[in-house]
Amino acid sequence: MTTARPAGLDGPAGTRHHTATGNSKSNSNSNSNASAAPATVGGATAGYAADAAAAAGSAEAGIRRPGGPAPGGRAAGGRVAQTGAVLNVTDQHVARWRQVRSLIFVVLLTVAMFQNEPRPGVTGQGLALTAGMVVGGLAWVAMTFRAGGERLQVYTIGICMAAGIFLAAVRPGDFGACYCLAAVTIAATSLPLVRAAVLTGAGAAVLALVQALVGASIEGITIWVGTMLVLLLLGIVRREREARSEQDRKLAGEQARTATLAERARLAREIHDVLAHSLSALSLQLETAAALLERDRAAEAAVIVDRAGRLARDGLTETRRAVSALRGDPVPLPELVGELAAGYREDAGAPALFEVDGEPRALSAETGLALFRGAQEALSNVRKHAPGSEVAVRLAYLDDAVRLTVHNRGTGGPPVTGLSPGYGLTGLRERAELAGGTVEAGPSDHGWTVDVKMPA
Image (tube, rainbow, N blue to C red; front, side, top):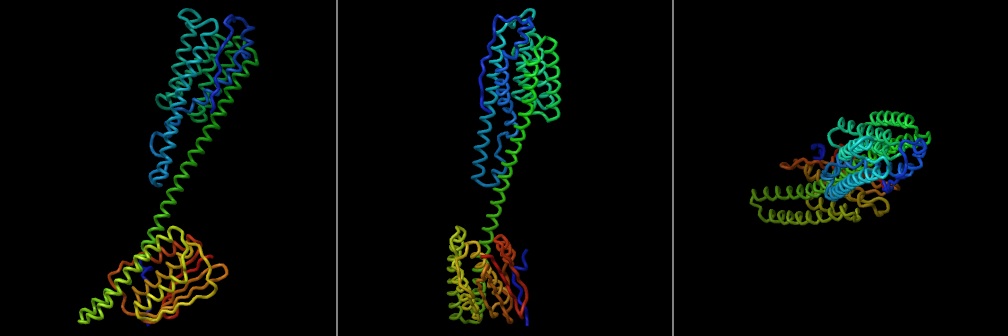
């Protein structure tokens, strides 16, 4: 007795503005004024620090997200692409605003530097102040727009910090050290951690030494140096936060792509299950009709052709049912499986027993569809590989699961030729595993058995 083999086995920061003002009558050479520096600039220090920190990441955002779609946007589908585009446009606007704001800060700082004596000029100490402000301002602008690569960025940060130290030495107790704060902030967000720490440590040490030499108070030195260190830490924290945000965005893109691929696989299974069942039965009927016509049995062939037309209409109905199942509508499992058995009985002219054990209950659309496709695939394989053999279909409602068993026994007719082997059993296993179920198929009791078990 021949064992039929199913075809399924054959396929494969907020801004704080501080207007820098000072006492125009202060004497830059008096130690008392130098000692009072912290009181004069203490409030502005924190303000400029926060402002510089907010402005520091301007070009960084533009470098990290240079105008393309968010990761995974195009591959993940229209909605993800639209979301990525919105985020990208928002990032570009934020980057531009930070750059503009940074320029506003350096202008305000320049104006503030003209409020105290001695003022910037073209002779003597004023010339030194002018030179320091020009060099520091140009370096500030270069840092803001990230001109050049990392090496040039290191140079511009170092120049900006050196300008701040120089201005702090030329006119103690003023806002010159704010250039150092801006340099530290941008170094913390744009340079590797070791380089940023080295630049900050060296700059803080030199600034403290220079301020001590010009007679600044311990409190003033502590404020400036402490602010530099705090800005370094804040920059590191900010960079870590942005890195995590970027990772989360990439993860969201990967999840969207995974969901898209899973949905494509689901659609592919549905298309196969509908077409394989309908077309295999239709092919069998047409081959039979062709054989009858060769024997001049036109009347019988007409009946078979009429049955083939019904099968084609049933295929359309099955397609609509598949669309309904994809929408999540419940599947009337016993009714549908019974119709499959009756259809096999009528088409193949062979016994097809169907029985239901236990009390039928409502199942999820995914579970019901997996069981229905299991019965459909099994009967389709019998039609292709052992047409006319006896079939027994059993649907059992257990306490925590539903089990479908399809067994064909006896010697059927010759396998139907000219059909693609497809991926029916593979797709059935994938479908069941996604819902937590199992599929077993193999020879048993002088035939072949397909067993599908789904949790319910």
